[in-house]
Amino acid sequence: MVVAAFTAGTGLVIDAATFVVSAVSLAMMRAASLITPSKREEEVDAETSSASAEEQDAQVSFGHFLRTSWLIQAILLIATVGGFCWGGLLEVALPALVHGPMHGSASGYGAILAACTGGALAGSIFAGMLGKLKHKGLIMLLDGLLMAVSMALVPVGGVFGAMVWMLIAGAVNSITNVQLFTIIQLIVPRHLLGRVMGVLMFGSFGMYPISAALVGVLSNHFGPAILFPCSALLFGLVVLLGFTQKALREI
Image 1 (cartoon, rainbow, N blue to C red):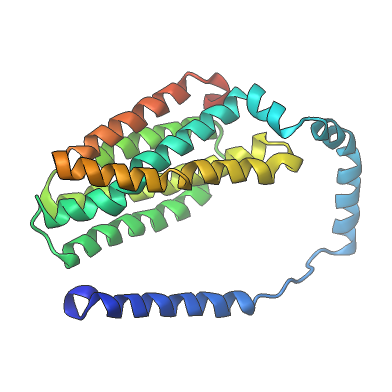
Image 2 (cartoon, rainbow, N blue to C red; image 1 turned 45 degrees about the vertical axis):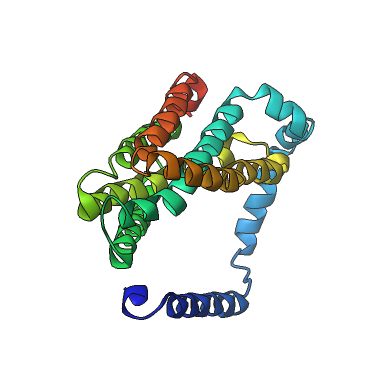
């Protein structure tokens, strides 16, 4: 709405101001110790009882863990393919779709993104209520399939239809991400958690430049609409592959 009413530069200035607010908020944060002595004693006892287990985990090297854990390999594959499928699609194909076949404007594109992020916000809140549910991996995989279906249907129904499908996709994507990070926390040895998260983030975000460049070329040759069902099909096939991992389904 800001871009449509004023200029793109005005939108960038407002966006920059929000980062100032974020920086000030972070600067005002202070660490506070809320642990009482009794709680601290309980924590020490728990740490002592689990020391032997941690020592055993510490013997596992990063390379060995990645090579031998089919579960973490499946998760990394899903995250990497997801970054490849959705990065360029949302940043390149979606605006081309709105301004091309949908004959929309900056307002329409903004409304679609707002629907997506609104769904993501609702999905994040809802995901917090699923903490006690079992089979987190199965929930993540089912959400992944629903996201693939939603993204495939984005070109259907004009701007309003795209808003509806992106709302659903944003919600299930947030739920999937929460379940994904929860699973990572549960299955990865503590001393390897940072490195595994680094590989996960690299695999996901590292695909973005490749995805954006490829989608740009394909959009010029075939149009942006066809890329949504094709990307959804690729991601859906990888998620179906994840269903073959019993350990992932039952975690």
